[in-house]
Amino acid sequence: MAEGEIRHPALDGTGWPAIGVRVRCGDTGLRAASWRLAPHTVLWEVLLPCTWPELERLAGIATGTSRARVYVRSLGEAGAGQLLVLCLRGAGGAVRVEGPLAPVAEVLAARARAAVLNVAAVHCAAGREEEARLWRAWARRILKDGRAARRGGAYGPPRPGCPPSAAAPEVPRAARPVRWRAWP
Image (cartoon, rainbow, N blue to C red; front, side, top):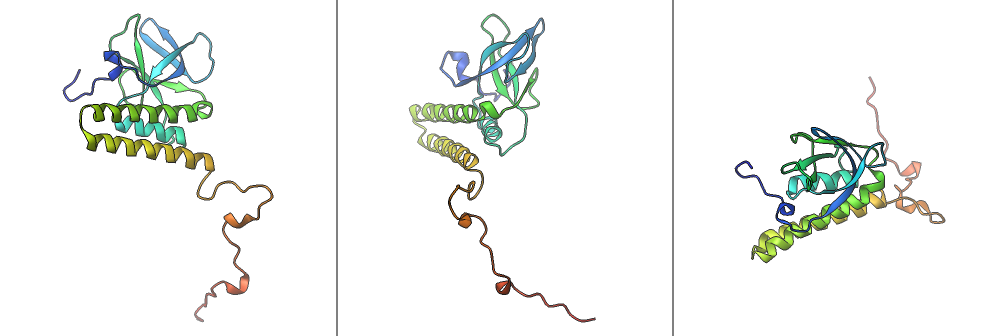
């Protein structure tokens, strides 16, 4: 482990949020991963990361504010009890998770929020109230982003039977500002 690298809580046996990903392993390790059913794959419970930048990006991907891709990599040494973790592009040995994210997006956002709240609880138990408050605020932000994504923008989708008042109001032609052109 490199200096300054954060050790994942799951390596110590602590419960951590996970999400189901179909994974195909080969002789050298991970070969493929998919959100949906694929040939020769096995459903694995893949852990979420424990650092804020990765959790923030995963939540952004899940709520639709980011179009980045999700990857899976091995956590620790390979073996019978091998753990896998979601990560972002650039991690060593990472395999891109194929398939549409839409069916699992809401679950991914909820699990990312649960992971953030787990980190907040760890800080609170250690007596670091400021850090715990910060992580809880980040969890609220993930929740609000998910709600905004479900609403569909600033005003939300128009409801049947309601006047289109939530959309941009129609301005009568006479009330529009007149632009004058200077004559040549």
